[in-house]
Image 1 (tube, rainbow, N blue to C red):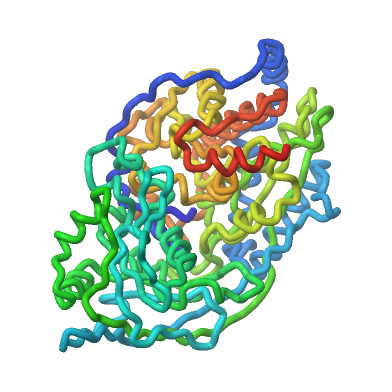
Image 2 (image 1 turned 30 degrees about the vertical axis):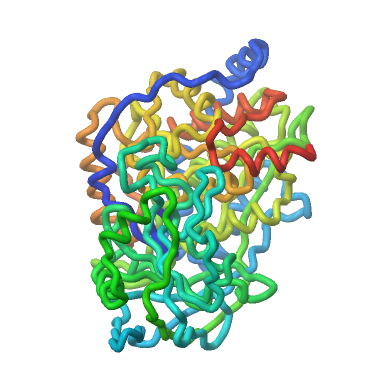
Length: 570
């Protein structure tokens, strides 16, 4: 899973994930008639019987075996894993996509960038020389042999946010063409305790580092540097570093990334403070100003930046895997189940093992996806709406496969009812909680609550909303284009062993297994909790498939506008 990661890895500080457990309040019920609810309940026992710990284990062992070679795009691992998934869909009797194939081609480019050893700052009669990796990291999305900014004027633009719904514009009156913009990590609401200011401590999309690069490019900036600060970022500099170094996959674009900033990167907090000091500015004072309404961007004195990156490029095509169970009476409306098939392949040897199997991340999601597909196919009552099963590529490299699907949808977005995403399900037995990431976004939470109640579980809001977890798995790309999305699983309270046991297991996974060869199938795992989550997702899909209405984004969600626009031509 891509958590707080930069392209390829890194999880937020897990200590915060283990704190503050609290039950959520009641929400409004989804729109469903009594007859519809009754119909879904009547077929639940027979249909759900196909989802078991044994079926999860069968699929999980297969997708995370050494034979899959770590499931990395552009390798034999991709060929084997995508073929396996397509074969399973076919054996289950599911139909291929609308073009007659179980594969959706996803064109990508691999860019291996090597920044110059130093980044030069000049002006005010002083020179600064920042060192690669210790003071800064830099990368590019431009497919060029060499990219550079030379004597580019430096500008501080607060958080680099343009958010009309919050009446906030850090670029107001600012011309950044040819300039390099310096911005803060996260968003303005994160700094204070006002829950009505943006979303308070809960990160909005405007706090994501990806958004900041996009916004700077829209304004014509030559470069964009984000100031790293561990607390608002929710991850240390080591995560930034590990994510920035080495080959990176990007989506292919017709202009080969020419509309992106030439240089994207990060500065350490210490380097940023030195930069501001040389510019005659006080970092703490500017930070405080940037968090208040009415802030206006300003030049950093007469300082300029010079930096360059040498690139190696390789264009190739990866693929999403998809299949569909056609609906009976509303076949032109679709419910999507998603999980990512990719991981990190064969890499650095650790403890004598070099295969990064990705059993939990995201073999568990794939196992649940296949088990749910099997359950729908074996259900005595077929769904009225069509069910799409989607295994996407490139999640670990920046949600690339789901982004491509959402921009090139095989099925119309305004006919797509919802995306139900599964990423990293915990193999530690049944849970009492159902933790909803991005709680408060859409009515899908009400569907999840109803299904959780059937399992005697309670709904728990995201415990660390300040880390922006909602924006860090494949459901986000569906949300970004307006499709209501659910990302939830049990993860904080074991039904039989309590909260402390799960906290210990998660900490052990994070420390010793996450994005390492040790993330491999363990026969001692208790997979009943994954089956529990898969069955809950199945029940949510069953109910959605039986309805004639569409779940809605809640008022205040930043994705509501995109859905309203999409549905306008429905």
